Length: 513
Image (cartoon, rainbow, N blue to C red; front, side, top):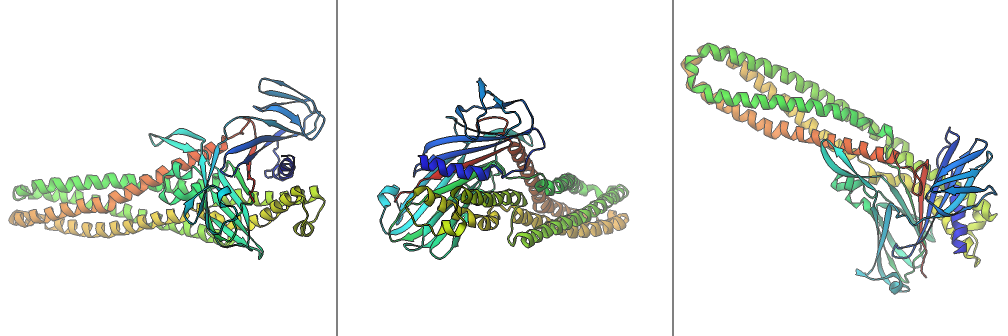
C-alpha cells in the first residue's frame, strides 16, 4: 500500500496542472485516486485537493472528506460540518482525505480464455486466446426537459484506459474503441470510452462507447497493471455552433411541412369538387390562379432551402477537412480540446515522475532492479509517453460529424427533389389556369387531372416533405440533448465537494502474475 501511495503521489503532481490557473483568489483542483481489484471492485479510494491561493489570511473550503491531512505543508485547519478553515497566510494548500461516497463511474471487467468466461486467477500461466471486456457505467444523471418531454441525460465523462502487454508471449493484439502501439518488445494498448453518451443521445452508432474490448493470443497469461483516467468533460461551447444553423433549418422545414399539408388538403378539396366544374369554370379559374401563386412561393422557398442546405454541407465539409489537416484524423472538436489537455497532463506527469525518482527517461526505461515502486513508475511513464500520440487518433470514435453530414446529404437530396417536383407542379397548374376558360366543355378530363394532382401531392408530402420534417425534428432533439450534456458538464463542481474547478478520477487495477 505504501508503494501504491507513492506512485499516486507522483501522478497527482502532474494532474494538478491539467487546467489553467483561475483569475480568482481561489482555484481548487480535485483528484480522486481509486485502487480496484481484478474484477473492478473498489479496494481503496482517497481524494487529494490542491487549493491555489493568492489571498492572505484565513481560507475557507467546502468538503465532504474525513480524516483530512495536510500533505504539503504545516498549515493548520478547523473543520465545522463541511467547512474547512485553513490558516493559509497566502500559501497554497495541498490536502488529502477519505470518503465513502459512491463514485460516478462504475467499472466491471470480464475475462475470457478461448471463449470461456473465467476469473483472471484461473487464467494465470495458461495459453490461448484472451478477451478482456471493460464495462463502464455512468451513474451520474438528471431528468431534463427535452422539447417538452422528460429525458435522462448523463453528465459527460471521457475515460481513457491504458495497459502494456509483453510481446514475448502475447501477439495479435486488437482493441475495440482504441489503438495499439508496438514498440518492439512491448505493445501499448489505449482505449477510449464515453459512458452515458449513448444513453443520453440514443444514437445507435455510439452504443459501444460504454465498453473497451481487448483481445490477443498468449502463451502464458498474466495481468499487468491497468490504468484509467476519467474526466467530466466532453463538450465545448464552440462545438455546438453548428446546431444553431441546424435549428434554423429545422424551423424552415416546419414551415415547409405546414405549407405542404395545406397544399395536400387543397388538392383533396379540388378533387371532391371537380364533378361540378362545368357549372363554375370562372370560379375554378380564380382558385387555380391562387394555387399557382402558392406553388410559386413554395417553389421559391424550396430553392432557398436547397441553397441553405448546400451552404451547411459545404461548411461541414470544410470543418472535417480542417480537422483532418490539423490532427491527420477525423475527430470531434470538443474531444480535441479535452484530449489535448490530457496529452499535456501526460507530459507533465512524466517530467514530475522522473524528477521524483531522480532519473532521466532512458535511465528509468533501462531500470531492471527489484524496487516495485520504481518498476510501477517505469510502467506509468512508458504508458503516458505514448498516450498523447494515441489519444489524437482515438477521438475519431466520438466523431458525430460524419453522422450529421449523412443526414444533411439526405436532406439536401430531398430538397432537390422537392424543387424539381414543385417546378413541374407549377408548370402544370399554370397550364390549368390558362385553360380554365374551356373547363366547362372538358369537365370530365379536368376531374381526372385533378385526381392525379391530388395523389401526386399526397405522395410528395408523404415521401418527400414528411421525411425531411422528421429529420429536422431529430436534429433539433440531438441539439437540445447536447446542450443539456454541456450544461451538466459545466455544473459539475466536484466529487467530494461542490466547489472544485477541476476533477480528475484516476483508477488502477493492480496486476496479477
